[in-house]
Image (cartoon, rainbow, N blue to C red; front, side, top):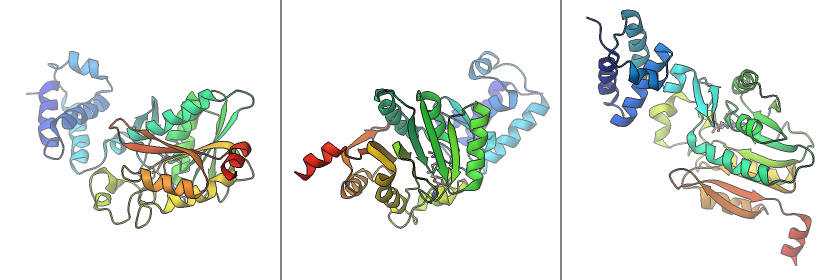
Length: 295
Ligand SMILES: C[S@@+](CC[C@H](N)C(=O)[O-])C[C@H]1O[C@@H](n2cnc3c(N)ncnc32)[C@H](O)[C@@H]1O
């Protein structure tokens, strides 16, 4: 006898809950079945007692088996939602995190406050799937975004995302941080660089095992890439330009110290949904600000 949608979901939830909290297991089971049936959540709720064909059941079980092996849902589906954009993701890119929306919100706030004249020039360092660059390009009025990554495979995914979303105010450049960046001075530099300590055991567990190490780990203290970006950013920013960096939950004070040592001013933090200082904002001083600091 064929199972109902509800009984399939309940069985999947039971299996998934061996490896994760029940609430998460319930959401993941639902997402996988929505993918197989190509329906939304409301449809599933309204058709809970409908029978699932053998073919659909087999397709669902195949996805469930991959998830039970640990493969991230975003890799199974091939996409992830970020700031209202559906982004293709592959094992070559970081899976965009909700925490990173804090950085996009902070950037959009500054962009929207900026007096209009010519388009704002924005640089996204380590663009991965293009998450930050594309969200800013889509929602920030009148801006031109340059998105760089050291990984050609990640850049190809980011470029695909820009094309499929019809976002054309982003250009993509292969670059080790600033190495291939020209003379252009930017109004805003944003980055979510790798920031996990190289020997952090979390790198060998959960979804992180499936993501590129080059997108995650940054030397013994997790700060190697942040140090490079902070040391070189001022040379690529306009006077008064902003540098906004995402970092680890325990790195806000270290990052603020590095920014201060590099001469950046107006240092502040933005918190994520959990209330954790996740993003640090700073500014290159304007000539008159600089003079008042010197005097
Ligand atoms: C934490 S991921 C962030 C990806 C994306 N911005 C996001 O928030 O989802 C860091 C990104 O930095 C890139 N990266 C690592 N080292 C780099 C380097 N030296 N120069 C440029 N990009 C680098 C990685 O390939 C990866 O895409």
